[in-house]
Amino acid sequence: MAAEHPTPVVRQLRLVVEAADYEAAVAFFRDALGLPEEAAFVSDGDARVMILDAGRATLEIANPAQKRMIDEVEVGRQVAPRMRVAFEVDDAEATTARLVAAGASEVAPPTRTPWQSLNSRLDAPAGLHITVFQELLPPEAGAGTRDAESGRDGGT
Image (cartoon, rainbow, N blue to C red; front, side, top):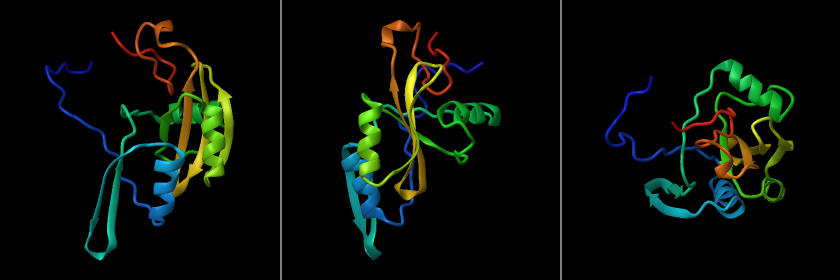
């Protein structure tokens, strides 16, 4: 059972990704996917970083059987590396098309999942394997927050 904390211990989840082609990664994630730029910094030796706002962050920890099941549902075979980044969007089909046009490789087209989301898989710049997902049920349809990957309802 999870311990109850009166105040959050962690205030932000920040995923740091090394991108050999920094400009292509920025163009893809900021411009094509639409993540707003929060900050950008340049340091000596052409060191650059851009922080993009990805909305609410969660950390989803899955055992190997769950990871295999998600791959099977979304793609039909094992494809994901140990880490995959998932982005909730309003329109999975349009976003997938836009990201493919911006240079992503489609691994699997938008597919309806048993947990009632529309999920596509893409290989994106910076070596990231990503899921783009659209929740198909309105938030009021569930008893709590719906976990798009596991199909389980969160909340108490």
